[in-house]
Image (cartoon, rainbow over all chains, first blue to last red):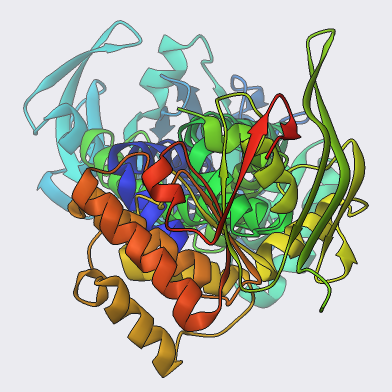
Amino acid sequence: MTGRLVLENLKHKPMRSLLSVFLIAVPVTLILCLVGLSEGMLADSARRARGIGADIVIRPPKTSILSLSGAPIPQKLVDVLQQKPHVALAMGMIVHPITSVTFISGIDLQHFNQMSGGFRYLEGGPFQGPDDLIIDQYYAQQHHLHPGDYVTDILNHRWHVCGVAEGGKLAHLSVPMATLQDLTGNTGKVSQVFVKVDRIANIPAVMAELKALLPDYNIYTMEEFTSLLTVENVGGLNTFIDVMVGIGVVIGFAVVLLSMYMAVLQRTREIGILKALGASRWFILKIILAEALVMGVGGTIVGIALSFVARALIQWLYPASLTQAVTPLWWPIAGAISLTGVLLGALYPGLSAAAQDPIEALAYE
Amino acid sequence: MSDPLIEIRGLRKIYRVGKVDVPALRGVDLDVPKGEFLAIVGPSGSGKSTLFHIIGGLTPATGGSVRIAGQDISSLTDAGRTELRKQKVGFVFQKFNLLPNLTAADNIAVARYIAGRGQIEEPEFQETLTLLGIAGRLSHKPSALSGGEQQRVAIARAIVNHPAILLADEPTGNLDTENSAAVLDVIRGLNRRLGQTILMITHNPEAAAFAHRTVRMRDGRIVG
């Protein structure tokens, strides 16, 4: 009977109920999108790093796991590393940010091909000149580019698109290393060095030697490096997610507080009737909380569904810039966050309904 | 002679409106035997509704005593009065006061549910629904029922838990003559057939004539 009362109450004002469900869904979607984007973009970075085919990554001192500032490594170091025992190939690369989430890589295409097996071209082919640009399929889709087109909004340079490659290797944009070094004032310098070892069994020995040779550098096996690309290892990201979670609770709380407060006001007389029939304070509170809970569960389900819509929209609009992962582990967490806000929001209207004087409530017009 | 079902002595009720004390009952004494159909008449503000609210456990008394079936309800807590409303009293209001979102059947069932009883299975209650003339209207919501039908559903709801007392506050106040007569017939029938103790507030002398006895109230006292 409680279920029927709750259901009929929700059906009685369908617009209010649907609007509340939608508003509860918004923070759920926000949380899932934020977490999905964080995890998706980090996973994408890891996938691209693995696609290079290196066994060891050498990054300059004082760099975070995600960002590289400039190109402080002398390119001559690459030649030194190439001479070390068990090093099959050492490859320097310069990386330059063109937006907050998109980077352009300067590569020696011959070395890159040796290390990674090369790009798989969907259109066009490799560099033919110093101003050539290879883009991946996502960047091509987002910017509607094909071989033969020119790009002029990167580093104020006129780039000629020579090839569109399958995604998943390196950055979305690759150009000849020397050109990017010159354009960024880093002639003779690289941002990071990738090392391929002759046999997997020799990786520990090479790691030990590199760490002894370059004590201030951040040196990782590719396995270590990609495992570090997590939300926990990105400074401030967890705090940012926590803030968004807090905002989610507050929005859920405010929406339900207003919605249920209005509902309680509209139903003052009905509450009086129930009290005249002998309904206890707990019975009244239970109905209000159950109603909020149903809206909270509905909002969570709609929020999860909307996160898929947002994901599809992001993939369609910004395939090269943003990658949103599906995060089913966060569904119950987002649901719990939403329900916490919802129940807190329903508590005050519920308690004030439960405390209503039956005579005054029955006289309410 | 057996003890009265309702025994009221020196009942007083003072409402505080702002900083002013407004006496609503100024010492009411009343005995109602089990099975009596009692009409209470009097002008507005005479204290009839306040008397009902106290007997029905909707509000506490300021002084005096009210005993129902031997239990003094004047000292009950809020939870105790809730229990009284649940188990011993059934209300019928002038404005019907049905839950608008529920069907007639659910309006009756909700009273049963609140009282902690199961579904309505007693054949005699089905008979009562037929007597009330609403057996075929139970799947309708209040908005689809006439005033008379709504009031008969409200009566069914009030007696579904077999309360000791049925309190009817102006039950025909919102009805036309024909529906008023039908509702009063039903109330009298409940009293005659089931021995239901009924207290009915009314302004209408014709309605009061359906009762066994009429008491008059004025200025918070019983005057005859």
